[in-house]
Amino acid sequence: IFNSGLSGLGWLVERQSDDKGRLQIMIQLIRGFKDILPGEVEQWQEIERISRELFEDFGFKEIRIPIMERTELFKRSIGEDTDIVEKEMYTFPDRKGDLITLRPEATASIVRAYIQHKLFAKDPVQKFYLLGPMFRRERPQKGRYRQFYQIDAEIFGVASPLVDVQLILILVTLFDRLQVPDISAHINTLGCPQCRPGFKAALQEMLMSVSDRLCSNCIRRRDRNPLRVLDCKVPDCRAALKEAPSILDHLCSKCREDFAEVRCSLDKLKVPYVIDKRLVRGLDYYARTTFEIQTGSLGAQSAVAGGGRYDGLVKELGGPQIPATGFAIGFDRLAEISGLKPADYERKPDIFVAALGEKSQSLAFEWTCRLGLTGICAETDFSNKSLKSQMKRADRLGASYVLIVGDQELEEGTAILRNMATKEQTSISL
Ligand code: HAM
Figure 1 (cartoon, helix red, strand yellow):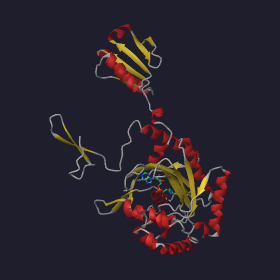
Figure 2: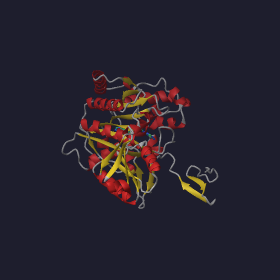
Figure 3: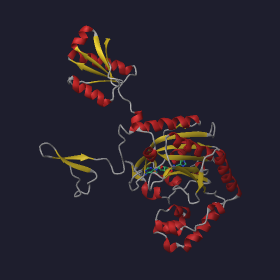
Figure 4: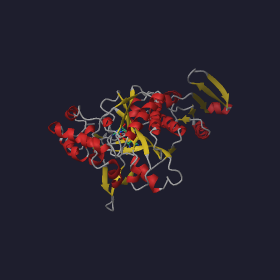
């Protein structure tokens, strides 16, 4: 097998000669996408199970939404000047020419569903969770994929900052249950439409004074959306922004009180946190509380979850003025740092029926079907192999028991049951 650099599609196809020396082309998966195979998927299932259980304990209901939406939905909610909308969305015209986008996140779609189905009519307070794939065309690296998965939670209809605290508590609890080491909760506030303009003006003024040290992206954003500059990862820009003003010095009294309540309540719940005045998040819909869970064990991709309050978005997307808040966890990143081991959750056969001879094999097939239907995982071999090789396979599969049956045993109405852990064998009546 060799990777062809010549075609320019080296990562897409691998060429291989078949046994007659003819060239075969094998199609590889798309760059930045990945398969989650048995051996890994058991850990994902366990993470899903524990997450669902925690959400349901806190009164969240599952919601499932499409993976494609009209492009406009993401432009209007995430913001035109964000990295996601500017350069990361998978957007294409469908056959009628309508622009559609593979969802880069779930919040916008959940808000759309909340408005479209008037879910607020019965009770504006609604809590949702969602597990599923998202798509962003970022540069792939460890912890960063083009199809990745999120565990998402949203709360609608509660203005109190105490629910922001509840979300942070859920996150910290979940990470603890999933045995994730070395995490810290970073919190900030982004102010509200009343006090943010003052901060933006102060930031813009400061940015003018360091313009010669900023990248071209930041210069453009300085005028249109200066908060985004705080998010820039370019080291020179980060250095230039060391003396940037803090939103915390520009808050109105309501935002100041809310942020104090968040901190006080986190203290009461004994949830440790770090105040991070640079935390602006990569999406435009946030106001007031924002937070991220960061880890030291993922290299450059330190954010394993992020979220915050987005009180204006429901109205912005055509619904009533209803406050909302939420978060999303990066599932792939979480799986990489969780202490849960897939092997601990792998289902192994309870019994392997090693059948010798035609009659026994046909019975073994019947038995394994019947055992499977009663919830006992049973395997057998269909290829008439020797006892030795069937025993080897049973061992490889990790079967707890092997039932050995041959035509002679059948005639006697017995079979041998072997306990694979103790190696004990007993003759049992069929
Ligand atoms: P976000 O910060 O863009 O927020 O994404 C949340 C998490 O998704 C990140 O912290 C990260 O762990 C994971 N993530 C993002 N991009 C990638 C990628 N390319 N590969 C792997 N993991 C990735 C949101 O998406 C908001 N919708 C969160 C939210 C919900 N805010 C309010 N409600």
